[in-house]
Figure (tube, rainbow, N blue to C red):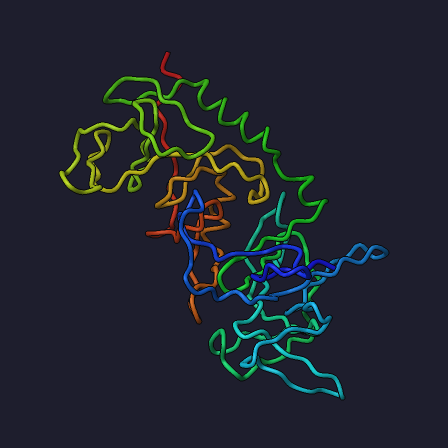
Length: 315
């Protein structure tokens, strides 16, 4: 059994902090967390090799820890309940990696492992309708939302079908081997493997309204704004640095990084970008929004991503 929560006490195996969108360096802190101290527990069965998720966890006294405001009920002599802000799960209806990945429906899991429809809001006192035909058994690609952080469960078999970190780095090397150029500065661009704070003439940026990739220059830049006119198609819009999304677990295939998320600029394969742009991540008390899996930045515009247009292989 593995326990997950905000508490740093001994029974917690994985301490989880609130995810702050766009915070790449861990400098920002949340003043009041919405994640439960003992949020959930995952039980892995050695014989059946299945894993199940349950709301809440055991404290130092080996008792299930639930807040005073948590929803509780009794059924056939057994007590069950939900954490204050709920533990939500979303199973993908089809194969996560190597197939046609599609998002599923969010449900809430109880202390006893029952699956329920969502409450009216995260902390509403009335539980949702029980969904008997669905289970708390984790499958490759299941999302677990703890109201402040969303976890992705990947199976060993699923990761075996996913690209490796080395494969992702090789695809970046192949893009750079094509010597993409900036059509204004006529200098060669170099796609970085990770985000950097510094800007150089080799750092590629993407025009988010059209997808043209260029170097950072002043042509068409409106003063005191992030509004730029693309010199290739004359569309006006924001620009952002490009950076490869180097986290293999988030990929649903091994395709080339030909798309990027809007507005953060993280690159990934077309299927990966389209999948995450379609996944509604719980946000706040009863809202949902799509987000970049690499930095948790909420996606902007429709569809929330753009196809990259490089000027490469010009020699």
